Length: 342
Image (cartoon, rainbow, N blue to C red; front, side, top):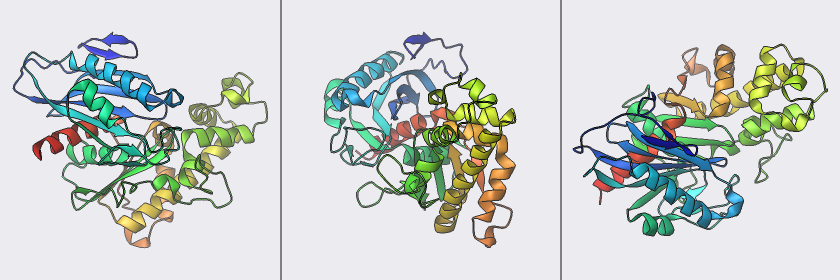
């Protein structure tokens, strides 16, 4: 059985694999986002055995989050078969972060965690080695192992959710930069003079196309009537990005304007990545992608418009099929990879 959202998830669910042999190797994996923390036990074939989640609540502090994560990981560890080898813990997290120490560097969606790390505390409480990486970088790694682009040597992964982040695989290696800051594609400028992100970047990808940014744009254009007002219960403070996409589907003119603007902002950012990195595959994931997939043809056309003409109409843009598990799978792969190098 697996632990999820405060309760146990049975092995009959589609996302749980019932592994009955202890010959495989396992890793404990965690994914720390601005909203939720998730944990799972993952085998070397990428099968998830047990999983759980809690609210991040970053304001409670990084030590509190580390202790709560340890309890979540122990629940996941309890789903392993007797005698199973667990190589360690891989942690995927929103950044920026230094992968070697797990130290945060002004993380916009984890306020109060700057210059702090949970690695020593988590290592001591779990009794296992801990490796930490940037969530989107590890998602990119997972895509080259389990996604639609297995074996790709040059791949970009972009997550568009509470924030916007990117992962870069170049010549089969994870690109982390001099201090772990590579992949912060959320701060590419897409619309100068528009909204700023939480760290103050003017007109950046994250500030203008993340889930909260979409909701904020809709609130600023609030008219108080139409499908969007109905979905929000008459209160603009209730607006979410999902409501905006749903209202656009129902013909709400304000929501349609916001969706069109979002597609343009996303396309400017993705086109810039195509032009700089020339990847074999550009994969997008995260909660906002569920809405963007309803407008996939328009999104592709817009990315082509913002990319160099050499790509023609064959832009290698795909949405991840690994869903919300992509960062957990990447975190597990980090643990397996690093354990072999010990």
